[in-house]
Image (cartoon, rainbow, N blue to C red):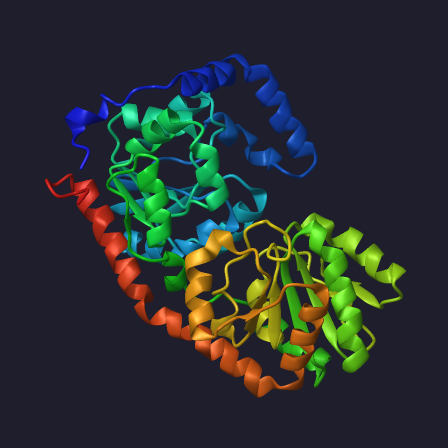
Length: 438
């Protein structure tokens, strides 16, 4: 355990000092950069001052637990934890994220007692007013986004800090090994580190997080994705008895493979509907153009295009609707796994009856996929042809697809134990008892 007296003894490395100096000196460039992003829709113009550390909401009275999650996936994964936290009288949650998509989704899904703010850019002059205003009683980082100034300033104020559902890919581990002092200093700022699996805990331990321990993946405790029931009924009626599959969280370099797989599946099952949900919704128009160039009848959700019996490819380029599309599809190929981008969360589709298909590159969720492989709860593919053959087989045999989804659900049985252990560790840390970081 890092007791309060030890917290100030952590050294600052030359790399961290350089980052702090560059961030402070680069204020005008940072401001210009954020304003440019706002013009492109990548920042929220109405709330841009939050990125400069200026709060747009009052701090509530009582205890405040601050959680930082990078984007949509990380934020959704801790919704159950947030609900549990705000259920305690006098306790509130501040959730920070860095993307417009996550802010939009959290506006709909955060419970009463929780507040969303954009995380300030990692510049000391932005971080300090943020911390001055919110005065968190506990800081919790989710997964892997470590900002040196934000962590350093919070640590210097002796705010208890935890890193939960910690993730460290093989590639990130190799990168941090080039900067061992910085890694040790950043990780040493956390009083509690809870890793997704033993391999990740070992990587963190190797980088200096001597008290990191593996308890499992909190994503398994996430509630099933929601959807608009009226829209589900409308689209189900429009689809009728057609076979449907979904390509979810697709990376730009996977788009051509998905369109080719659609053609191969359609050759076997002529009335197949393919739903394509790009990782970046603004890729929708480009995917639609590429599909039309191949002669496909395309509907684009962001434009309000109707889903008709003639629609072959439906571009799901909206935010926060994957619960709808997983419910409509018999099977889903999870993107970022045919290219080396670490894969996507495999546990969102199965609770909604959707079988999971994934490529070989799933290092970001290695522990989950290893358990899925053992449980025969995921269909693995390694090429466009294998993707098409697997999807066609599952669409042709819905019973097998259902069995695949049900096998994946066996992993959820211990999920609430992970949530319980995480919540308990955070409660102990906030109380600052002698065993808080044990």
